[in-house]
Length: 129
Image (tube, rainbow, N blue to C red; front, side, top):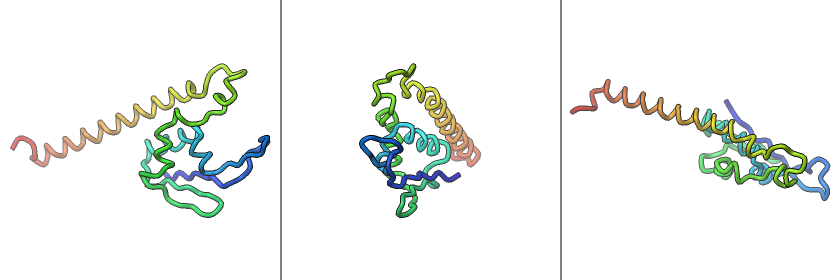
């Protein structure tokens, strides 16, 4: 279950003036942050990599990519940059329900893990002595 951020330095398609996509612009985009966080909440960080035009490297738990992903709603959104002209909803509203679902899964996983740890402790006779 690997997750690879592919972020070479390339020009944005049809941008005037011309701007570049980089790992830094990837890290700033809310939807990109959501992708990373979704993977991390389901699979952890041990199989997350960043590929640029130079190389591919594993991401550590304290990586800026992971830290930024935790701040999804502070990320850049095109809809907000365009002041929501011609749009029914802000992308933040579109992100809310999927993120609540992921959060619920994460909470359930922690509860199951704690429950299994408690059962193991009782079976081992470590409680009540």
